[in-house]
Length: 265
Ligand SMILES: Cc1cc2nc3c(=O)[nH]c(=O)nc-3n(C[C@H](O)[C@H](O)[C@H](O)COP(=O)(O)OP(=O)(O)OC[C@H]3O[C@@H](n4cnc5c(N)ncnc54)[C@H](O)[C@@H]3O)c2cc1C
Image 1: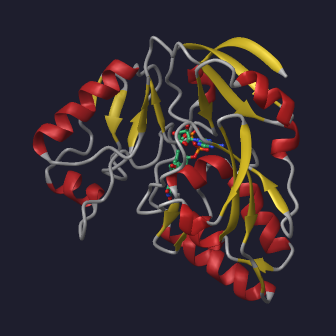
Image 2: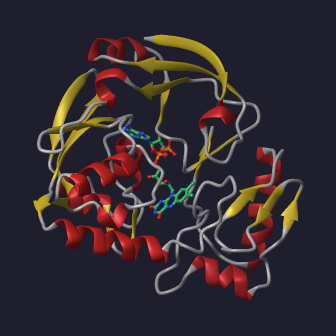
């Protein structure tokens, strides 16, 4: 286990976030120790807006045994989803293609029920192991209250590993589906971001609503509504959390949108 003072901007895809004590856990015993005081669990930091002041709690990151996987057995929650999507395709296993391009860790993808119109994480799960109140429990997906970009994990629960529901399929079929998903993602900005900032209201696209209001390109400091995709807020370089909050506020003054990101603290 490693404990170090870090700046969370180095651990979030938006590149924003102040200081915290980072606990990198590698074994189950580490996890028991790390959770003895108030904590937050960090995945790949791709759906987070972390304040410039940082967070007072321990920030736990999964590595070691939590970053190992066997696609036909248990998959660690600290494994990167893009790696799994590619590896499953290589092994002729179908079920993850719709998650192509989502820069999450498995645990963060479960928590957010990450997905696209081609499929979401919950559909690919057979079982989920969650650590809470000092013990490891196994859940079936139907027990975890999955919905659109949400789940109801037990309070303070840390996903530690999952079993996936994958099917053997011809390689060409898997590759064809992946190419289709990839093509649908082509318009996404390449700059630093945290994916879609807002949830799509039922029957609408948040990105399109933002675009129609003429808000693309709206800028506070180095935080800007992407010109390519209205629901992406990009960090042009030195954006602060304060800039991003102000930009979110200006958008929400115009449109009743619900934030998809999680804000820390
Ligand atoms: C370029 C880009 C494209 C994106 N495209 C998509 C997309 O197509 N679809 C989509 O759904 N999302 C997308 N996202 C958003 C993001 O990737 C997802 O929300 C993802 O699920 C976040 O996972 P993470 O591991 O980065 O979690 P983090 O951002 O680190 O954390 C998010 C939440 O999950 C919790 N968490 C993390 N790990 C665990 C764990 N092991 N156990 C319990 N809770 C945990 C955190 O505490 C936090 O509450 C995109 C993001 C980017 C930057």
